[in-house]
Image 1 (cartoon, rainbow, N blue to C red):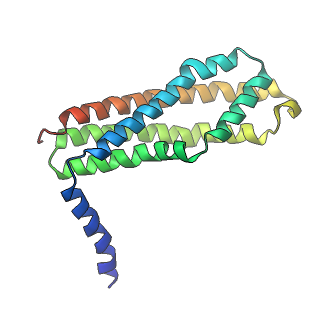
Image 2 (cartoon, helix red, strand yellow):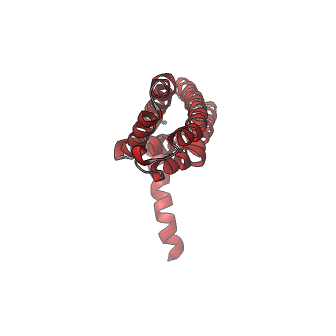
Image 3 (cartoon, rainbow, N blue to C red):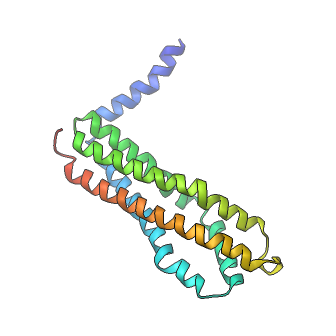
Length: 183
């Protein structure tokens, strides 16, 4: 009985993978989500962070605290985790249908995106939490030190996330181009 219960979902997934088009919707969804992710990180690199650096420390900390709070929403979560899931699903489907070159490019995208996710959880999220824990900027005694300890490592990690997501997007573009070719 337990074996049958475990194999039923696997059989349903296998059947769904067999009957669905060759990595159509999931590969497109992965590419769109990856483009949105790369664009978000690039916007921070190109405009948000340089703009904040032009202001005072209190403005920087206030805005980053507000952004970090606002970004924790369902839409961002759907794109952030959806990019990972859709890329993995597309890679499985491509491999299953013998589209090995496209599958390899999709796995490359997944590896690049996994790097961005790892950076997010290893660097950016802990920095964001430390910034939030500091409290209201007007009450922080060493605001300049807090900002300096946050801004440089956060910006470096974000630039790496931009590169990783852009590389993942390139890989997915190549997978799209190869998806109809066998092997």
